[in-house]
Image (cartoon, rainbow, N blue to C red; front, side, top):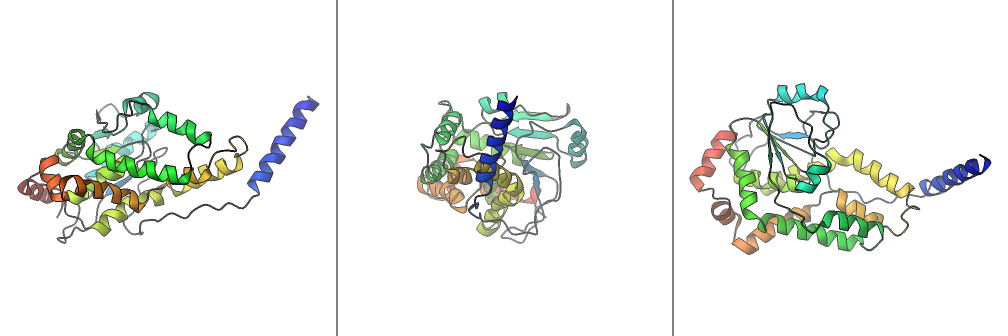
Length: 291
């Protein structure tokens, strides 16, 4: 018993030594306040609706048609009523099959559930990447490159699936929610494409994208501080990598848009030829979602 007490005391002292160190976390870029949703759903992170923002033609996005979030694995039954009140009838899960099998969404019976993964991860890159991070074999520069590559590949490697996701959202005759794991990258790219189709300007699109940092700030800071305090468990791990993987950055979305322009010539060509949305159809969507 005395030996256990000594070990416990030693662990507490070690924990305190690490926790007392100055924490030098990088400050991310946040979206501007004013268009944040005040909808709170317990155990669902980064949940918000797209509404009350004006496009380049001065038209305003209608309320309660498009929702986005992180995964719904921890959605509680007592929150099902909130989904009902919001009118959400359809869920589009952007995660890959392995992610879904590990943490399946918990949904009300009446919800239409669809799975559209444009990122298959057949080589189990996510799991392998985590192991490399813990072993200190990935630094912040490596993580940044991986994120940039992911954004580039996501919009161009599986265009048919991207088309299916976008068209399903825009063609839905009822409120729809789409999500990935954190609701920041795959969900962020999807949102950026939808807003581009609806003719929002770059500043508005990027501001909405960066709001994921606002909505995820508390949970990210808790994780970073915990990782800092328990760094002695994985001493080789570069904490800056965790920052890179936790926040969204403007240059990530830049990478996706730049890749589209590089491969297809322009966003308009991508919308018409890859997503199969003609200018007339685009105007039809604007009339549907804007006023």
